[in-house]
Length: 144
Image 1: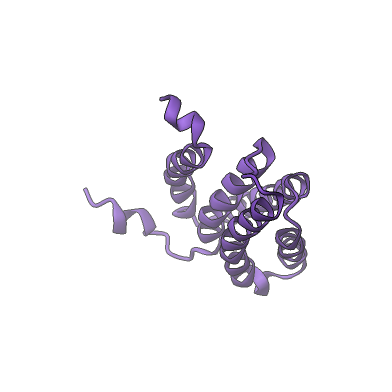
Image 2 (image 1 turned 45 degrees about the vertical axis):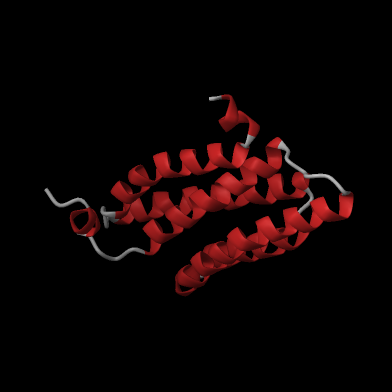
């Protein structure tokens, strides 16, 4: 158990995996209220990513997160682009954290950085749930 706390990215992965089934359950509901709630939650996650990314010192990641929020608020036709940008952000945050660690000479592992990674990974699942149009999503993966 102490290994999980020594390597916080494992904890982030475990939390993301535990949260994913609940988001998939929401994704199977195609009601307007559910989609609105998913969009609102996605905007909250993106806003938190911006704040935590700023604290963690990952700057390029912030620009894409701002762009995502603008696209998500402005028009429905950008929804798929927002989700694609979130997957790009998943890679960027790790690259930026590695580059920053190399420049500083030590590994930067802070609570804001770990939380930002968790939110990006959760945002990936949430974004896919938001753009999902298949109401039988869960039946495809969890056959009874």
